Image (cartoon, rainbow over all chains, first blue to last red; front, side, top):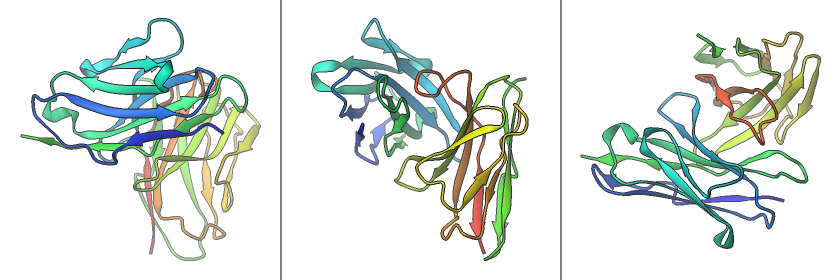
Length: 114
Length: 114
């Protein structure tokens, strides 16, 4: 079965610093890949997704992610963190074949230090 | 504005009580989902429905029940059989199956057993 691993339940960065949130998946078949963001006591909002085509995907709020098939990874980056980026981030992966269900990572909380 | 509305935002349940969480959407989406969120565990699927009058169990359906009598509505009942119901509950909808489409989330209901 598909599994998703987000490295680090908490990743702390300073305002203006690079944001790097890691996501690895287990499927040998290229899946669809998603990053969602959750602000405190809110629902989730889609940041970006990869289905097919260009492996570098740009999303909202200056975030982007790169699908690397050889590394089975879909890491999320932002060149310069803002205080408003403080939230929890979830990677999700879907199986195009098989169950066709969405599998969620455990989430990475991102506090931003002033 | 289109969106998903969950109510109430906060809910308190006594031991042995059934409670119902409301989820309404005006996005004209066929698919609707209920997730449970616990700290550090990501999102776990409780039930989902891809069409009116049909729904499927997710990974943690025991102690929960749902109905889908209208396209717009997908209420979740937390029964007394659910031994540890304290959690944050999220409802979502999508225009097609979640594994390939963006999910739109409600603001969540925080349920506490007192």
